[in-house]
Length: 168
Image (cartoon, rainbow, N blue to C red):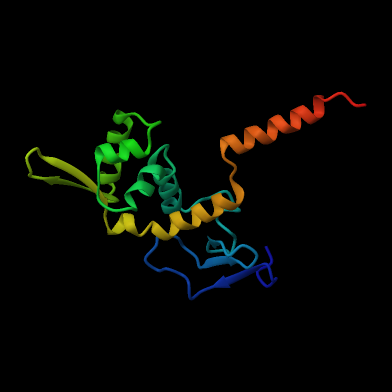
């Protein structure tokens, strides 16, 4: 990898010494993405390794339904039934399991309100709110690049009809 090229820029100032990685951050000028250099100056991800924190974070927020739950909770404190109503395809059992996982990770707080009847509400912690910018970026990316099932199906059906139409 030629670090002097225009494509990559090494940024020693962006190196986070509190992280577990060994080398400075490397930023792609083309994409703005940041990677990590190993002690020899090689890109860790390109060499087949992944930063363990990055991998764990992606696995955590990338679990099925987790993103949807976090997106709902970005709106503020929410009761279980309201979350379930916002994501009707998810079972109550799965919602309870994901909420427990997120609570265990410190991303979601479970609040018991001693009312009559007792109410349980969920809200994002500071750690969870720190994901707001990330989710906004994912939403912008999705608007530009991800087709909904209905859009993809109608495009596929249209293409199939054109391909199977008799030529005259």
